[in-house]
Image (cartoon, rainbow, N blue to C red; front, top):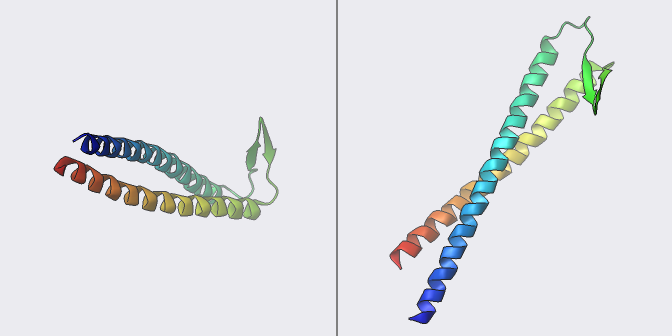
Length: 111
């Protein structure tokens, strides 16, 4: 009977570990989603900005006027694409871990 208890405790620890990992992933997904949205809003605002008006970019504690808007827009879109790719990988990982978590909980409850 002692071996079964140790096995159950290990399973409970594994379940708790997966639950913590899921929480971390969900937090990362929220953060990356927010950043992705911000990039989208920024790209849209840049494209709607009057070409005669100056555009500034924050660099540390200063604002610098942007000379090449197309380059800036391209850079912003590339960063947004990278975020989308990263977000997609995080979502896939979260789904995989969630399935493992649900299977482990079900198995643990049957024991």
